[in-house]
Length: 66
Image (tube, rainbow, N blue to C red; front, side, top):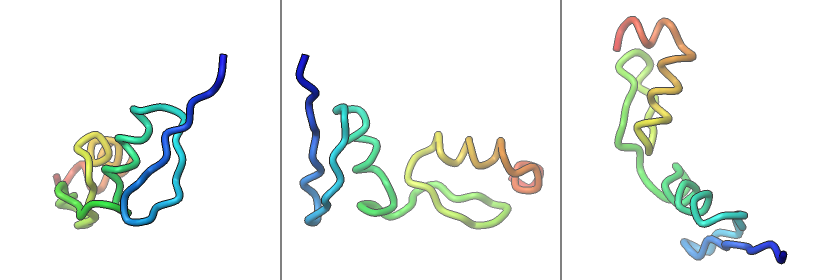
């Protein structure tokens, strides 16, 4: 079975992903999009809600404020 590559074609990006799902996640990254989800504790921005949730799970101070 041949391995497929999924290159990012946005903004001259050179990232190559191994699956279509990885490519979609990459294209939602801070490199290509402004953040839409913000932590109330530290004001850090995220492009995906799951990234904010992971941040809150790993940062008890932020979770307490959020």
